[in-house]
Amino acid sequence: MTDIINTIVFPIVRRDYILDALKSLRYFTPPNYQTIVVDQTRPDAEFEAQVRELCDVHVKTRKNYGFAQGTNIGWRLAQGKDQDYIFEVMNKCEVTARPGPPLQPTEYLTTCNDDVVFIWDKWWHGVMESFRRYDTAVCANPMSPREPGWGYGKEGFIDHLTFRESINPDNILKLVEEKNGQHVDGLTCWCSVFKAWALDELGMFDERFMYGGGEDYDLMSRIYVKDYRALASSLSWVYHFWGQSKDEPDGLAQAQPAAREYWNKLNVLWPDGFDVWARDPETGEKYERVPEVAIMPL
Image 1: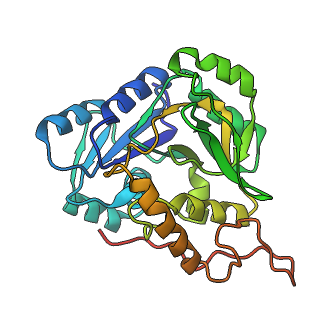
Image 2: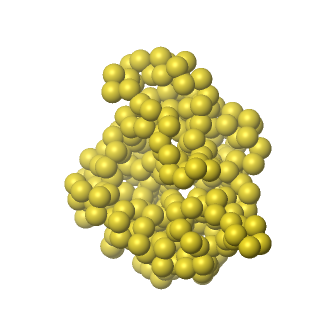
């Protein structure tokens, strides 16, 4: 049996794409992962039964916890390090495991939007190759031909991995060849693979970011202030429909401005809340991110 090295968590609030996401994941991925769906949708017995057939653990919540907290619920269940928290999840959610081996701690922890379709059988190999090439990387994100890669470079917020509208799952190899391993520093969060030890050190997502937007910038700041890197890498590709994993059509546009304002309030010592490269002009030291990462009650 293949050793399980990766936990993939899908925190979902819509039902449109998740079945395709799980089916394509199974088709294009080596069997070295376990999947947890944190289902925050309205009750629907038929849909829930379909999801349970395709994942290892189905967590049915009684409310929408959002992307950050929903992801953390799955990650913390898999790592099993806080029994009081796990007991609380079991108490307040309906947790159903598929017959087979129980969840186990894994070397990698992945968060994935439900509007992702896996289109290439080397996407996981590309993630592993990114980690091999960049030894300070603690996060590797597959790119998507649906939209440009974005990130945070030393000159500020940048967008330098462009996409092609003509690229689709049928001709993905053209894009693989064209981009030839380019990368951008940043988190994409439509599919982000983290080294578990790094999240132990840095903290998982800050759960004050509700219901989605800003948690990626925040975690990226913690990664870079410790001299690690997060890479969106063209060595790996998935197809992200973008904007469909929110529970309202313009959810991203609504969430981002508020998240950015809130992020700056949390990080009052930083001259610019999004400048993860910022240093104190007098000492030359990197600004520390304050306050501590918050885990919200269920």
